[in-house]
Length: 109
Image (cartoon, rainbow, N blue to C red):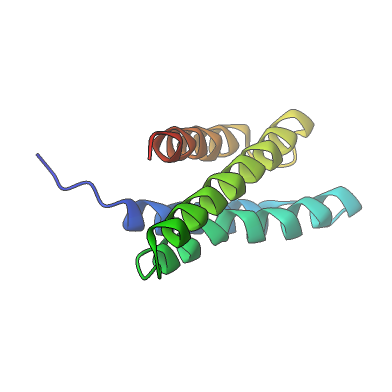
């Protein structure tokens, strides 16, 4: 059974998000969503790195909650992208699916 590496999965998610952001149209909505999504979509990987060096159990829990909040924000952005058809629907759906899975993981943590 392969080792489950959450850090690598979060990094891969950030890369997928960067591809989505790069593919958004240069409209007011596209630019706004792109700015929000690049922050919320890359933040979980960075915060996970911080959580690995948490100063206390409470600090660790706090950082994990931030990751969950950022993933949920990313999920809403991806839903907007999908409903407004701002990006390839199959790729947006794949990104949304991965985000849903990551949310499910962090809800359990």
